[in-house]
Length: 351
Ligand code: XIL
Image (tube, rainbow, N blue to C red):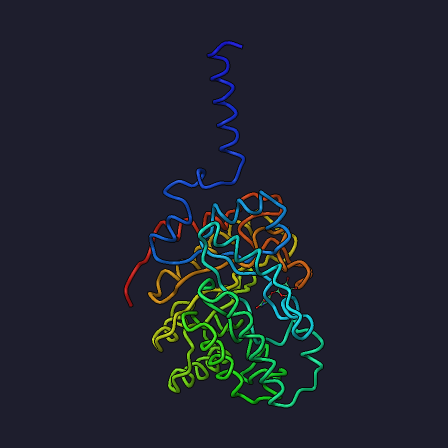
């Protein structure tokens, strides 16, 4: 082949690759991590351990497009301490090492929750002192092992009932009373004084009675000097139902002196998933990222999964799919454009 022909082949291959492969070079106006850094927010993603170890395409999506990671499951109680004192650090270590190797921030998820608890905790029949000891051991083990390496922790996850304003009737509440929330936060603070400590909740992203109840709880904790540093608004939305008062609602929490973030964003589409729905989902992702950019104490937006092939949505919400910015074949969707355009615009106003 002549030199000219080689050049043509190289050019065509490069052009086709540029069109087909996801990657930072395809995005005009700057990479997502570059834009997120420039505007002082994290752009995060929840990761699973196996594909992080085994799938180069999965890893590349994470490192090309995001600046922060959350372990989707690996740091949950049932995986970390399946039996008392029998810790399994293999999953969390993989996530923490990967984040460090690629200069990504880390959200720790999660410590006190009603789900994914091992039977020895859930059915342990501990009295208050016994459960307090169990809580301390677990929090100290996790925050101690990763002290200084995990930026923020969801210490309290989903403390309210799914709907309404009552604190959730979980093991912690039943055994220790409402004070479990402050106790958990203090214990975490002692274990890693630099970590930013969060309450993480769903169904509170826009205003409403559940959001009001969370606001009351947070106000009380702040007034009592409890080490609460932020609120994670999970952001598991249904297509067509993304609240339009995200900014106002996040701002009132920020006005308490708390950081806020969208911690588990996905926008699930009822099947059949149409091109129209995917196009409209672009705007929904744009609006959520814009909302964060419009609240000066909003520290970031994290999406809940790397691609639609790894999303929790089809299993947990049968009849829904396509909730994330990458499709099941690792291809970017309009939603990614929405994120990119919001970041391209940047922070709008000081409130
Ligand atoms: C989900 C995971 O995505 C699933 O893989 C798992 O089976 C159940 O938990 N709120 C949270 C997350 O705080 O931990 C949940 O993650 C989704 C809802």
